[in-house]
Every structure is written in C-alpha cells, then in structure tokens.
Image 1 (cartoon, one colour):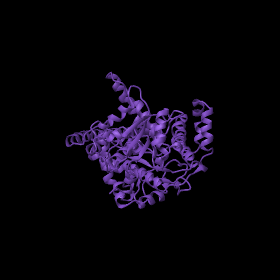
Image 2: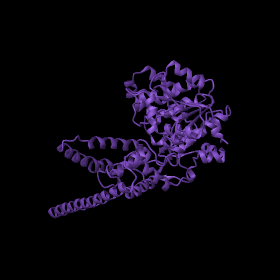
Image 3: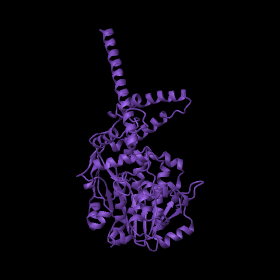
Image 4: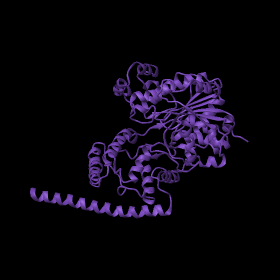
Length: 493
C-alpha cells in the first residue's frame, strides 16, 4: 500500500527547475525510485555542442542513479528535458514547451538559482528574482496545478540572527516589484555599480536576491510554499552514503585543509554551524509538495518550511573542524601539498597570517613550477581561497537561530511509513556517523581517490612523512626566530 506521499505523486507530472544541480538530482532520483510519478519535466540550459537529451543520458553513469537503475532500468526515460534559461526574459521556453507545461503539469518545484555569493547583481536579479516571478506567471496558467514549492535558503533574511518561518518585508528598503522594474530600465553595468546600495546590510548578492524572491512569493496567492534549507551537505542515507558533487563552503574548507592548502582561518569556534544532508532536503521538498497539494486553499499566506539543525542536536564550528581532522588523520589523502594543520587567527591578524602561511609559500612553489617549465597555479588558488573566506566570514562568526515549528509540524503529520521512507528528523542524526560517510564521499567524489585499504595505507605513509617534515621545519623556524631575538637582545643590551 502506498504512503501518503507516494499516493500524491502517483501519475503526477512534475516540472522541476535546477534539476541538473546537487539538490535537483537527489530530488529527481528520490521521485523516480520511491514513487510512480508519471513524468518529470526538467529545465536545462542549452550548452554548445551538447544536446539537452545528452545531458540527461550521461546520468546513467552517475553513481547517484545506480541504485535506481538497478531496480528500474528505464526510470530516466520519465525525465523529459525542456530547453530553457532562467537568465532569459521568457525563461527561454519555446511556445510548444510552454503549451506542454501549461496543460500537463500538476506540481512545480522551482529550485534553479545562482548560489554564488559574489554573483554580479544583474545576473542574481535575473536568475533568482525575475525567473521566480516568471515561474509564478507560468504556473498561474497551468490548468492542473495543485502544488508549487519554491526553494529558498534559511539565510535569505540573514540581516537578523533570529529568523522565524515568516516573511520579512521590513528587511527590504524597496520591494521586489520596484527592484525588478529598475532592472528593466537600467543596463547590467549600471545595476552592478549599484550593488552596495541595493544589498545594504545583507551579507551578499545571493542572500539579498533570495529575500527579493521570497517577496515575489509573498505577493502571490495560490497553492504555494517556500522551503528554506540551511547549508546543504552530502547524502546521509540514500541512495549512496556520502554522495556529493562540487564543493560548497564547509566541504571546501575541509577539502582545502585535507590537501594541506588551507592552513589559517578566522572564525568564532563557538558559533553554530547549521548543516543538513541533501537527501533529507529532498525528502522535505517532497513532503512540502504533498502537504501543499492536499491542503488546497487552507493557508492564508504561503507557508514557509525552514530546515536546519535542531537546537537539541546542533554542531558548533569547533566540533565540525574536530570531526574533519579526525577523518583526515585516519584517512589522509594521497594528493596533498603539505601536512594538514590549521591555526585560527583573529580578524585583524588574519591578513598577515594568510600572507605568511598561504601567499608567501604559494609564490615559492609557483617559482619552482616555473623552473620546471610548468604553469604556476597557487597564486590564483590562494587568491580565490582568500576571497571565499571573506565571503564566508559573516557565517563563520555568527550563530543564526532558525525557527522550524512548521517543518517540525510537517514531520509529525507524516505517517510511520512516510517518516521511514522520507525521513528528515534532525534530532536523531548521529553527526559522528554522518561525517564518516560524508568525508568518505568527499574523498571518492571530490578527490577522486578510492576508499580502499591500499589507497588509505598510501595516504597514511605520506601523511607520516609530511608530519616529520612539518614539525622539523617548525622547530627549525622557531630556532631561527629565537636565535635572531637572542642576537638582537645581545646587540641592544
């Protein structure tokens, strides 16, 4: 017998944007594996030399779909790619595809967004805000629509530190309608030059434009809801423990440390780090679509479902880094630059520390690469790392408290079968066990190193060698510094 969520999606046609992204792939996989969804239309931006059909066909080799294809070999045939582009004024949709969507779609999951913190303002407005309004306008024409889920972020209102599941129009000096109108009147260059004035007290263009997108939703009526996830991390349970794709903030930090590239940081070790597994996020999205579609017309305003670590089971940044080092020391990577270590500096001293621990060694190694006829890379790498650290700064020094009563209530409304199949209970998440899988996934999918005894043994051997060199160099440098101070004191006195 089907669960409530399975029954809801049976024979439904879903339109998904952002399906080629990290979260989007997991949503598609979970829909195909656990429900009898009729069809999934997924928006793909055309790429030169690669058809949108080919972009779906390559998924057959992606390990995230391995379990699915073993049980349902033809499952991906239910994914129908639609050519489109959220940067375009009309979403880049042709009239034929618009007609298909309008006549067939019953559930919309709008997850497409640019998640770059430093994205140009004109692009952030086009992709994150204007595309949301265009999606809503298209959805209003859909004759069979019963549910619309907009994927936002828990940090969309991060000008505050205590954030409830409600709209915050007071954080915006100008509403989404005025800003979008401004974007239509002015050139991209002019809009970009106005970034500081528009962003105001928001940390970056990403959080600002996601707040504007929520304002677009606030102004609409209908069977809508907003899903606000916090920082999305690798798979916890299914279909592949630890599966990940690309590097986000926390993963990038641990990966950089594991490589021996990131050696100094500035952060508040006691600040809370709000992390959630990507498969749990996919489960919340499907539950949101179900509850929105089965409670048509009951909500006066679009409900908001924030999903993050619960206060009963939340990590601080210090715990996260300790777990990371625990894994690094037991399962070190083979392709490393130096022995992994990390020193925390206060914000005022960080630029000097970054120069001596990152930039200066980077210049030295780049010089060696040039002498060997190879292209220097570390200068550019460290420039990008320091930029990312600056962008992550507000989130590494601040604890954000998220109200999650709606999401907790949603969990409690699920049947036992639904709670088992679409679990997102963060109270019961074992962080030690989770990160063991997550960091193994990082090793496999990001570092492209196998999780075998031979690979780990080779990494441990190299790890020990670099450890001796690291502490030997540290002792030598300290001895030279002390000798210099002694000579200086002798000269002065």
